[in-house]
Length: 381
Image (tube, rainbow, N blue to C red; front, top):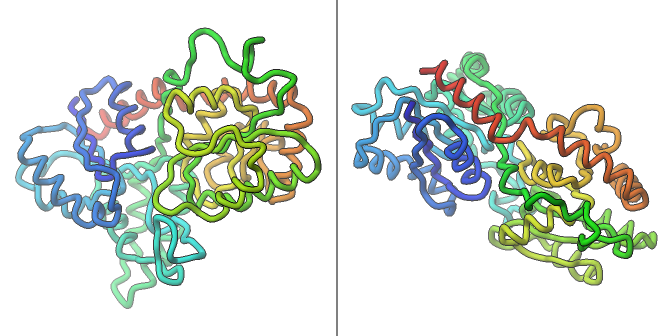
């Protein structure tokens, strides 16, 4: 089969997802993309540009797989003579209805005056789902949170609320996780944490990793508050802060960097080789996120034998097997600090759990996930 991936905001996790599937699929997968900038304009005008390019390429796919940043209704309208019978699947990495807003409406990638949501972008998601033949969500949490929020969203409008469409969306919605290219994280036949030559030795403090975006929705305030509490208790540790920044970063990073300067071994976006090394060096990875529809970076860290400390909410309970929830998932800030202190004081026990979890997350490997995508597309065709 010929599959065309349409990715209007092609960067970060969107790019990793598209190129990962392209690499591991048994189908012939082509990409039609735009750069990852000006996200509002991508949702408004990206479909026009991509429709023009699609027509110019004269490419005839058997299935189209588009991301949530595409206005599907506009794209289909402009390409109707060419793909009137071609199935289109919409892949929901995120959505603009349940994505959390910042407390400060002047910061972050979702700038809103006084925290007010712009429902136009949520409506683009909604109409695109209606127009698509199938809707794939990256996690059960994401799908359920969307379907729960849609009725209230539609009631926001004055008449003809079309509440009956919610059930139509439900019947065409499915969960197909993001694949993770674990193979690229391998370092020869050895692991940094498991050799006598490792940069981490008994003489060094455990390394805590932050490998998420430097943005408000990842809640860096809670992360640094936990680290400062542990530091004040006299527990030694080191910190590596990596991840992408988009625009002005939250002030919590500046404050944390200043207060924990003596503990920090890396700060700022890491190139791939540095990032891979940090994954294998790290003993603990922490998330304090308010928002996470999937969690690629956490799975990457877990695969590299890093002990995860994560909120007992969002997509995380679906990423971590239930038998490990007690050790790895926390309910509140106190639970985060408690688990962090335990992991720092019981490095060998945490390491053993991390090794077990590394095997437990392999079902998210692209080698397996791509087969699920391929099969689902064959059924749609």
